Every structure is written in C-alpha cells, then in structure tokens.
Image (cartoon, rainbow over all chains, first blue to last red; front, side, top):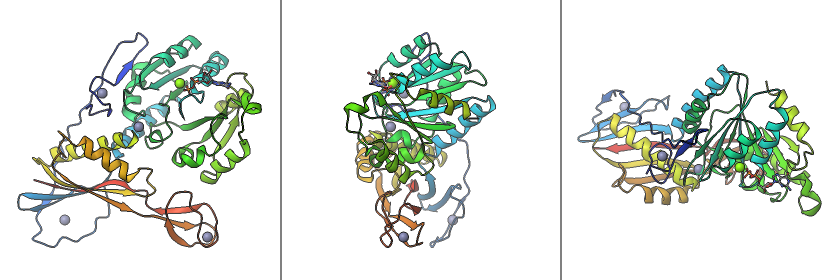
Length: 275
Length: 113
Ligand SMILES: Nc1nc2c(ncn2[C@@H]2O[C@H](COP(=O)(O)OP(=O)(O)O)[C@@H](O)[C@H]2O)c(=O)[nH]1
Ligand SMILES: [Mg+2]
Ligand SMILES: [Zn+2]
Ligand SMILES: [Zn+2]
Ligand SMILES: [Zn+2]
Ligand SMILES: [Zn+2]
C-alpha cells in the first residue's frame, strides 16, 4: 500500500513528464515534535480551546492522546502551500472536476487552441491508468504532465505540488488541473486551486447536483457541456441550474458545446475575468 | 473507493502520531464522522477494517462516533437536526439553512502503549 498517494500498490502512482519517464514520489514525514506530557492522577475533564494542540495523558503504560485533528488537515496544509506558489507566480489555477466523459479534455483541447496565442497554458492531467489525455493536450499545443493515480480516485495536493514543479509552470500562465473523473472525493481534496470548475453534460441527469451536493457546493463555475445534444436528450437546463443554485447560490453557469464551439466564447470571457 | 482513500489518510495520521509519541502500539482510536461531512460512515468503517491489516491500527479498537447534522434556518431561525445537506426547514420548509454541526471528520483521540 502506498503511504503517500493511497494507491493500492507502491508502484501505482506515476507522474509522467513530457518524456514519459516513470517516477514515483514518496515523501515520508518524520516529525520531530516533542510533547508536553502531564500526568493527571485521575480526573481529566478539561476543555481545550484549540484543536491544534496535541494533548497527552499518561495512564500507567497507556496514554490517551487527544488530538481532534481534521483527517484532511495534511492535505489542506499542502493545498495552502500550493495556493501560495500559484499566487506568487500569478498563475491562474483551475481544478476541473466531472464524471468520466463529461468533456473536460475536449474543452481543454479547444481552449488551448483558441487562446494559447494570448496566454501560456499548462495542464496537469489526472487519470487512473492511461496517458491518453496528456497526449491529447500536448497535441493541442500546451505542456502537460500526466498523473496516474492507479486505484486512487482523486488527485491530492501533494501530487499537484510535485507535478507543478516538474511542469515548470511559467508566471502569468493558466494552469488547468483535470481531476480524475469522479464527483465524490475530489470535492474533499483541496488542491490549492484558485477556482473549481464542475463540468456536467446534457447526457447526464438533471439531478446530478442533488446526487453530488459537495461537489456543487464547493465549485465556483458549472459548465454544462454538449449543448449540441440538447435536441436529442431529455435534459432540463433550468432545472439543473435551479437544483445547483439551491445548494450554492453563488455558482455561475456556462452552457456550451465543446464540439461545435457554441458558448465557448463565454468560457473564454470568464477565464479572462479571473484576476 | 472514496472511503478507501480516507481510511488511508487515517492510518497515516495514526502512524505519524504514534511515532511522535514513541508509542509501540495503538489500542484504540476514536474517529468522529459528521452526518454532513461528505463521508459515508458505514462505508468508511468497512474500508478502514479492511485496510488496517499490517498497519499500526491492526489491533486497535476502532470507535466511530457519528455526529448528527445541525442546521439553522435562514428564514425562521429554527435550529433542527439535518439528516442531509439538502434538508428543508421542518417549520417553514425554507432552504437553505446554515449548517452548524455535523461537518466534522476527524480523529478525536488515540490510546497508545
Ligand atoms: N456531442 C458532444 N460530444 C462531446 C462534447 N464534448 C466532448 N464530447 C465527447 O464526449 C466524450 C468524452 O470527452 P472527454 O473530453 O474525453 O471527457 P472527459 O472524460 O471529461 O475528459 C468524447 O467522445 C468527446 O468527443 C460536446 O460538446 N458535444
Ligand atoms: Mg479526460
Ligand atoms: Zn504510490
Ligand atoms: Zn490535560
Ligand atoms: Zn478518491
Ligand atoms: Zn424555517
């Protein structure tokens, strides 16, 4: 079991750079903290103002360590570090999340072709197994790095940190992070992105927001893709937006078709508006 | 799947804390899972049970404490138990409500030796 990335096997997490070398990153944190152990004879009901302090009680050989530590705190801390590195370089970082096949890679391919002349673009591609998406992105003209998560179903802040360094992202560029196709846990793992973009397509159900409330709640923009298929499917755009807004009143929406290009201008405009 | 990654986060966290405290083993771990945390407590527990083998938590008692979701209606200020994030106010049927509890997902304590 891989300790760092949570992939099923130590050889599973692969970060591929443009030459497709196979690296494997494993950081092990060794803390060198010391505790203030204090022995209480018996009763130890006391309140702790901060959840950040480790608190130790000795009971003979046994010790009760009261932690109250957020299980995702390690990831959140790293995400903050990423956020700072992005900001320092004035990199606009966007985390794209969706179910498999909603059109994230297609949207990126079109976006790169449309705006690469005006702004540098870099892409981190998350996928469980293949290198296909990064190849598609590079063909469109942007440097890409592929992270294969193996059996891991989301990207985490540490993987993004490593990929960001390898990719050597230039200042003032846009960094797109295409997350693993999954609307569940990517919602819980902050990558340090400036904004999160959730993509759904009209071939999915209108109740997507209700089924995956965390994702819609944590996103800033919702792209409704494959608008070219609207005449053929039974998908109510207004209803989807209403459901999503009930969870997140500030969510913005763009209806577009990556295939025909309809609505893509709105997306480019939105990108241009992000500071 | 999702709960597996979270279970791994817990095992890693327990391992780090055990090292920090120079503990040889962990006998007990208490984990709080809020009903509105986005973590499915039962699936998480099963994942953890499967994954603890050969880890520092292998022989530990695992206590999972579930905290109910709590909300306060934005319209009428009623405080009520929220079974799920989308719950409407039982008094005025309004939505949304301010969430005031049940989003926790944390390790509360460890008993080490
Ligand atoms: N009809 C239609 N198909 C699209 C559109 N965007 C993407 N697709 C198709 O949907 C499939 C999945 O797209 P992809 O970009 O790989 O999705 P991802 O898994 O989210 O990266 C591909 O066959 C695309 O050609 C669109 O706007 N309209
Ligand atoms: Mg893709
Ligand atoms: Zn690994
Ligand atoms: Zn004390
Ligand atoms: Zn996951
Ligand atoms: Zn009310």
